[in-house]
Length: 81
Image (cartoon, rainbow, N blue to C red; front, side, top):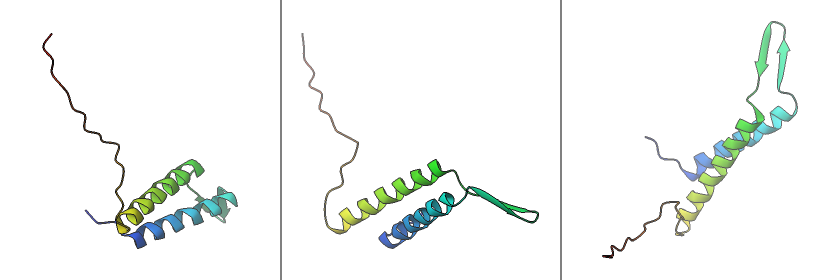
């Protein structure tokens, strides 16, 4: 398992932003017998959101801030009725 660095996250985010720009100029095209079809724009936007979130998490860790997790610990108090 590889560790994602801030530099890697920035690189991936830039690549997906570039992909979004490329799709806006055309979803697919052909040259002779070859054809290129780009990834669906909704999938690209999901990846952009993922890499933005990863970058925010890495920056927060870098600055010593706590990352809010969706996991919560809940206490249960047993009662005798």
